[in-house]
Image 1 (cartoon, rainbow, N blue to C red):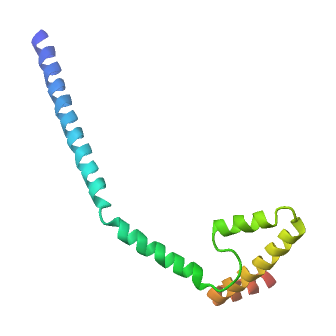
Image 2: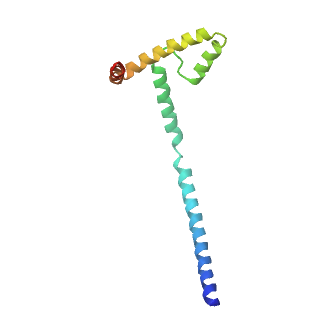
Length: 116
């Protein structure tokens, strides 16, 4: 009986040791894959950033396009809530016009749905 228990304990111990080695190798392999997968990512990210910047600047409206520009405008009109509301209304109108230019079919269907 004692021999059977010690044999079972030995088998369980060797299984756990093997499991830990397998786990360690899996972690090392996953770490290697994750660290090497982003090697050439800087050029792709820069290209995407340039495309987004071009798309943002392509629109010729005068409304702010970036968070920094929005914050700058908010600082400029900080003491004048009426002027701020007027600018917001004008910029909203421009945004709807820009949206309608980009998505005429969607704008038309939305307008029809709003009328119904």
